[in-house]
Length: 208
Ligand code: PRP
Image 1: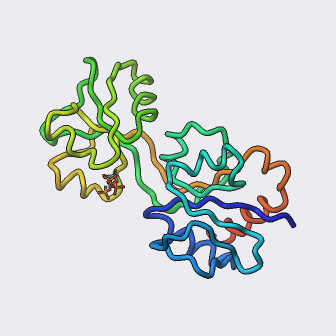
Image 2 (image 1 turned 45 degrees about the vertical axis):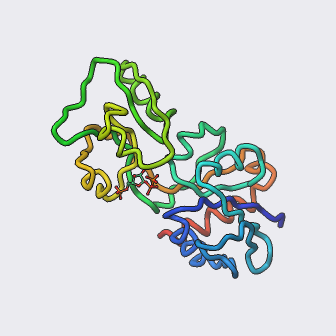
């Protein structure tokens, strides 16, 4: 068997993903989601886990630095990486939505300013509707933008809805359901087919 490199996204779903891998018998001894360590090995060292920023996971996989990635669909869509998406782990379920002030309806015809951490997803969504937008790219706390007049609306992830609610915002339009997915480098899918398939079938059994 060849060894495989697995890129795991830091963030909310990391712990649940590690728990799922444990269920399949894959154990990373020193792993802790708060650890500053970036590389971990399973017990028989057949899997090298690299623990990286979620938005970078699709890039590691696309470039072949990792054979497999486990990351949210949000980051897969935003990165536009050329990878195979082979399994939905059902972890970290949430959605992309357009949100704005509670008293405001979503204007469907005029040019809009949209604040978001996800410019590609925002552009694609409004392109499909034939509506032109200007994107204000932020790296966090996007909910602030409509409150201070920096943008008309936001495109962001909504999980519990608490962040929107606490800032007097609401969902005006759903875009897409998202969850944690397993992605595979296209070359690795051919050259490490047995290893990739084995991991996928172990995860599928653990999910049942
Ligand atoms: C994400 C997202 C929302 C929030 C949604 O932000 O961008 O702000 O979570 O979650 P909720 O619906 O459960 O409230 P994150 O926690 O990653 O922090 P950030 O704003 O600093 O990016």
